Amino acid sequence: MIWNTEYECMEREELRKLQGERVKNMVRRVYDSVPFYRKKLQERGIEPGDINTINDLQKLPFTTKQDLRDNYPFSLFAVPQSEVVRLHASSGTTGKSTVVGYTHNDIQMWSEVVARSLTMAGVTKSDIIQVAYGYGLFTGGLGLHYGAEKVGASVIPISGGNTKKQLQLMEDFGSTVIACTPSYAAHLGEALLEEKIDRTKLKLRAGVFGAEPWTEEMRSQIEQLLGIKAYDIYGLSEIIGPGVSMECRCQNGMHIFEDHFIPEIIDPETCEVLPYGQLGELVFTPATKEAMPLIRYRTRDLTRLHAEKCDCGRTLVRMEKCVGRSDDMLIIRGVNVFPSQVESVLLEMSETKPHYLLVVDRENNLDTLEIQVEVEEQFFSDEVKELEGLRHRVKSNIASLLGISATIRLVEPGTIERSMGKAQRVVDKRKLK
Image 1 (cartoon, helix red, strand yellow):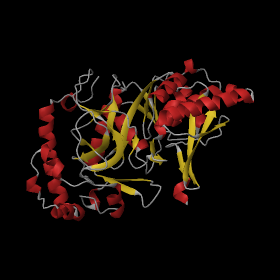
Image 2 (cartoon, helix red, strand yellow):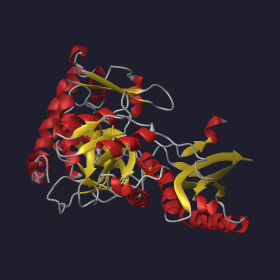
Image 3 (tube, helix red, strand yellow):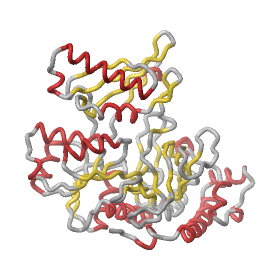
Image 4 (cartoon, one colour):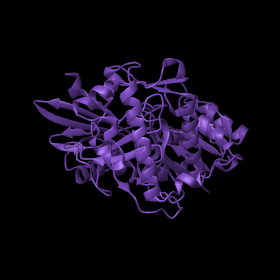
């Protein structure tokens, strides 16, 4: 099932021509309307007339999150304030929030790409979708909400948290689709067991999960806990919100809606554009965005792109699950460490739960890594000798994958704080000293 065959199945050459026209028009708009971009282009000796095809995209400068913060709140807007009908903002841990704006047409486009995304997960107007992403300045809740309404599905706008209420509505309203972060989906699955709710009484059949990295092991665990098919959705507020890309039924990567969001992969150090199939930093140019079009925005997400036609019939490129972020990457004793690598190890072990915390510190000028891991209740209550054996196996598996030694601290179920939004996986105390 495909929502928009014209664009999702467009021939590659025709799509590239369309992208070229849209980039050309966008560059003209930002040159005329956004002083920041006009200055950046002039510094490079670029005028709008120099951009004519999609191949000219590489001539253009990059945009970073710091650029958004430096132009806080509205200096990157390309339309008058009177045309901005929605404002969202991301809550950064440092510095000012990054603010994004939407025109009426932007909202319609956003609804369109989320409708395409939900259709990939088999959502139709017969479904009841429980949106447990946060509503408000975070783009998750309203993004999924408008897209689901465009499909014609019935929407339960419950937002995040209030887990008992979530489970009650699943039963009483007959929710067929759940949309939330993967960590919260795992928490809901655990809560089902704790509340002794008969899963067979639920009508859930699919889940749309995003906003944080997750592994194939976590997908399997969520599917088992909730009895559903789990789909990955990708997005970021700076580009549009959720709905930049989405998995189809083949689940062989997430299709990027390239008619709106033009992707590139670059080497994060040299900024050289890399070919399909190579791992690098994902860059997007949201060429049709009216309120705040960005030129070559560096997402800091690390992934690969694949351009082969998918068995589902779509011709859109596919991005692999992000393996981490170039700026969130931990460097511990010279070794690059991503939380998703740790998660992959833990979820392969039946004794551990999908809740963990990496605590990085520095003692005597040497980096230390402690990994707190929740243990399944039946294993935690065993003898100390058996717990010590489990701790040793976790330590050995982590060392084998990461190439460094970590202190493993096994903790009781429920010890690690649960998040209703993005899960906090890392506490880096080195930054606090």
